[in-house]
Image 1: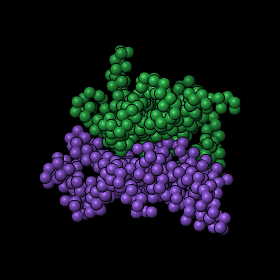
Image 2 (image 1 turned 30 degrees about the vertical axis):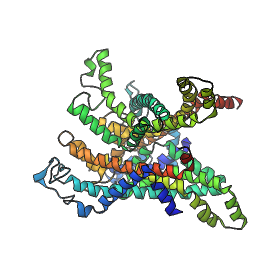
Image 3 (image 1 turned 135 degrees about the vertical axis):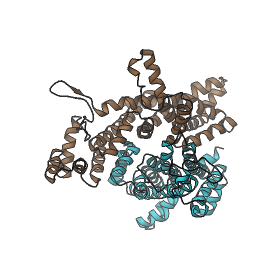
Image 4 (image 1 turned 180 degrees about the vertical axis):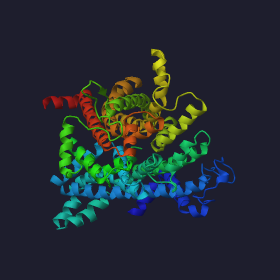
Length: 279
Length: 326
């Protein structure tokens, strides 16, 4: 099922574009040490705030560091944070959603109340508050974004489980004496995978944006380590003299997030039988 | 609900490593262990967490969020009057209206643009108009709001000097006439209001478009067309009203995002609203302010949802009848 699903998804032009963008960005980030023309942390006082040129394609920053190199290395951080944060939130979401949707009763009520409470606290406030008390670092940013964005997946998984448990094949399996774990892992979960994948892909887009926002505020990835968000923070201070410092990291964020959004929406279109038939 | 929120915001504060007194004492080398102990007693930090939560809840019930830890010791939520009749304004009291005005204005602009765009996209479904609006939506979803703010700030504020780039008023605000004051406030608010509404546009436009498309497939639209009503009438009186109903809920649900988003926007434009207040409080580890804003922000969200529910019941006769019957 996996391969045909993948091919079907890629036949959609939206997801094709998104997929190409993401693969491109990933390759650039992965091979950053080979591509980057300079050491991203190398301070060069003779080359401060130079505009884009053949030596420095994206110019240099206030400390004379090569922006292109910092962008490539920063991309690794931004992509990593996005993936790990969504991994965490998806894992929590699946666990809680499965518990709520399978066992129902008071567990369901409790988990759904928790979701309601979490949803009504403005999430950015919550993230800022938590992160302010931990020392800002990449690991903490990933954990905090993950811990504050599992509610959507939880609702999704719960809804899928609720609708699936009534279906014949699940009932049949139960009548045959299948245990809870078997029902959950071999019947319910695989069948609710599609919406989970779509929501995680879109979730990565949100997490990348969130990370850049946090780093921009100085509460995310800390200097001298580069991330697209904190290159932008530097850019803010030099905006009157050095437009390239603000333009490129923002463009990188925009393109990456766009890639994930296109892929996610494309997958949703391709995998959702309803939206196919309406075309 | 509120209790859950208060529990979460309270326990986040207590996850914090270290001791609040560290901050106060750190600036004062003379602070002895003894005086720190006194500080802890003052803030009840020597009591067990549960007792602290109880005390905090007790004060919350009277809307007393305590005073800021910062030097000025302003009350967090609402003004207090001391025995000499001096009024000290609350921090949230001063910041909240600013954020509310910006967000409400932004929301109005968003809706005013998103509804027509959504209708166009739905009517021209699959044509170039729809495709360009879809492309615009994807970019709107993906663009980091703070980056757009920076670019526009640079372009309109620094390069062209059309709009001031920070604060709410000019330095000479007090000396301006009424008209001058209005103009001054408008030009200061322009960028902070327009930018979030542009980024918020994408979601609402998409929503209106999908809502319209759904409605177009309904039988009563076919009936209306079959009756020979003009396309204009079909779209605006039959379809639009039904497509806009769910929008009420979406607007209600978007409130936490708006409040949260104000942190970055207000920090960039140096606007003394809730977001900036929160950011400063986080930076200074100002616990009472952080807890106050978390609680008030969440209460606002609940209020927003409640208003959305009421508005929905008011707008939709089916729900209204259900409510009446109880």
